[in-house]
Image (cartoon, rainbow, N blue to C red):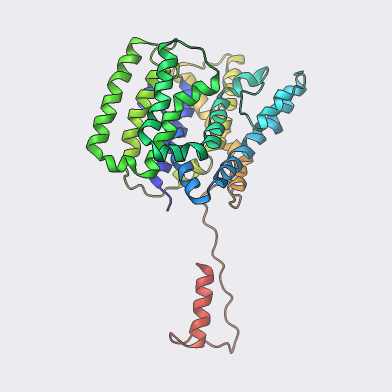
Length: 360
């Protein structure tokens, strides 16, 4: 049965990411550490897929992720870069499977700057069949390893490549997703979860306050504070299980979350640059307001044009607007002289029940 509360968290994280990139408000990273929450949710779902499909869960996850990426990058971004003079390089093909940062030039350098999330997601998916058994044998140690590694990197001021750095930064969140799926958070109980979250939040806040980044207290610039604060948030968020009713907006946001994430930065960059070129304000309440309105409209257009790719990748029937109820076929009226439905147990009643079952 689908967990609508997890859908709510994913939808909220998706909206928060878009709002942050529109406004740049650092406080949003503290109020809702969306990227860590997205990795935690993905970790929980990945563990569930591995339990159900085994190692084939990796193929299923990649099949759902890559087509939407290919539409943006291989069909649009890479040809656009080549047409604007970028010489062909084999590294451009990494946009098909970005295990390391692919090459981007010109306008696309900024417009595809958020592709690091897909790179890290791929690594977590590929490593999960190996990590999940280790986690189930040594759950606490497994969760502590990425946080310890990140602490060593930060305290020793080591320079490490982006992939291992991000695996340390977000690996704890992914493993907390494993813990959520396996029921560890539920078994801890609400009181212990809150106590543990507070024990993480206090040093996290102290570290953030004493180690501000170039944008102040934006957690994206403070890795250790980000990881600890996000862990506290995840414990409280995933330790809860309120009842959430199905809602059309929730359905749309979840069915199109990847498309929204992939396209929102190119749309924001295009709108902002167009505004600056025409002398329009792009900051402050006026600038944020008009850009938000235009970005929402353009994202709606993008979802209508390419959002269906997510349906195809997930094995669903393509829909312009997700959540539409498919019409139930109506049986034709019985021909004159046909045998009417009889009482339960009669042959005609049996045929009637077969028709009803075929509609279910």
